[in-house]
Length: 471
Image 1 (cartoon, rainbow, N blue to C red):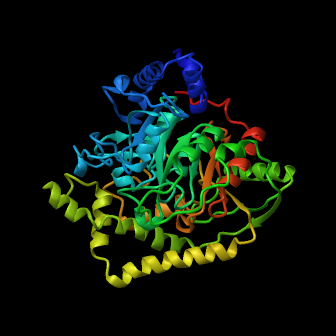
Image 2: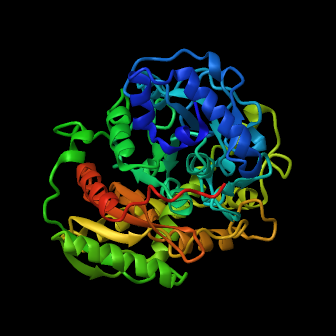
């Protein structure tokens, strides 16, 4: 298959070519490998392209034969490496498929490899001592974001049209904004994280995908949504498939618009200008808009979200013991070690404060935004930062400095991991320097249908398909 033809199609389009007999699944896998071989050395997005990818069986399904990457943390794939971006887990091979991978196979997706992540998915910067720096296809001196940075770089560069991602504090939406992609974080309970990660980060984290088009996002919801046995959070299924929302009318919505910084990092003028342009577009489509301040205090996000992340490290001593490995600078990165020290020093009262803060955030946001159907915010206050800003590989970065920086940079994102609301980053514009700018839409809990329709409307009014990363 011609490379330009392969890159120009989204997942839905490639699957249609397979169904029509114009290409075979093997053609698509070979096209993905060719593209990988051409660009991955410069990007370091894919840490393993499977040697046997061309011989894997293909299942009949809505995305039959479409190449797909698994993020190197979260959903397990039987017999394949899952090292979570860490030297501590080097050589780790789970013995079972996670529910997410089972659904991917049933949809006909061909798992061709695994994408890079920061260590233990703890950073918005995908750079590790285990695998190196993942670079942004739009500018190699800029981060691809994280923690799904490898997935985002691979999709933006055309290696695959769709890739597994997950989001506990922005890890789908950050790289979507950095790399110019569609990044949906579904409602809590919409997609099962089981059997191993059903309550990941105490309900903050969800699994989904990164795509280039809204129709791929909608189809992926139909593929991956649904409960599994033992899930602690479940929500009612939609009345109709999410792909039908692509043709449905969007009701008149009341939208809250964030035009100010919600943290310590100032809102870039180009980002604000795109917020205003998006608001103007939605107003012209008949929606009512109202400016809103931050519904939550930044220090509460630092205590709640970052506290939950810290508690996620509490199992590392036992894991290291089982692996027969030390917890030191030979297995963990400098900031991870400092965060682990913080975690192990936490008192029961401090642990309870984390959960009390998360409860308070949910109440405050629900109360202050109840009158809105949708919130419109920047995804990030700036375009993709340079590498290393708050990377866990930095020996000079304190745990406190990491937490403060992470909270400030990703201040529009973490609140909605706490509430469990669905949110999506859309690549609605570019800076003067050519870097993507993401705009976030947040809907009411379980209202992904609203996001599909509104995202479709914006994709039509403010299209991005003509923009391609210059890699």
